Length: 266
Image (cartoon, rainbow, N blue to C red):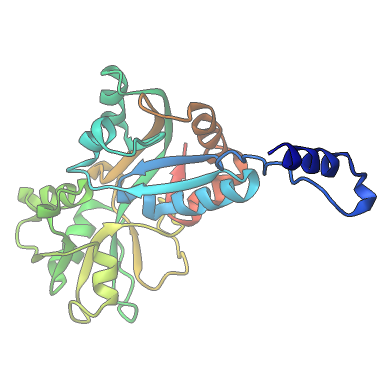
């Protein structure tokens, strides 16, 4: 045993030029920063993923986007695991979360519009007034819209619209998912229309957008839009980076990103 100690001491005393060294322990690197953003499809499909990618590229902070259905999202914000850091919700629901201390830093985000869609070869009708919209929809072979069984906010709004007395006689057809993809997948004939979320740049005047599928926004007096807000979850593990992400998402450099995916920033 004494001999072993002598040998070890001699090795430690050797200069580096002798070719011997004792390796130092490898440094322990901290885990990369990460935030989680929970959002209904109205936002996660309307620019959020692009904004998250731009933030991640700029800061190195990983952003995990967690799309969630409207039927589950409130419970998941309060109890889901892993907990979200950033929350995105329709404005009234975000208000509920803040008033119940489940979220903070209430921040208006932007507006998503429900619009009318058509087949690409069909003429683009005038829907700039409610009577004109009703006439166009009544002339359609079918008006596809998201099935309200899904629990989505826009599905419920479209279903209630079609059940209004002045819209009687319109052939509404619930579909799985959104109306525009359903039309693109071949559902409905050449005269079919669809009510669904607008995920491209658009404007209230319904001037040409470049999309052969989009007719345009519905008349403003129908209130077929969703005002969205964001905030920080009370359960956030990384509130500093969550706040930085919200600031980045609302920055001027991201305004065109939201616009290109259909969100009108306030």
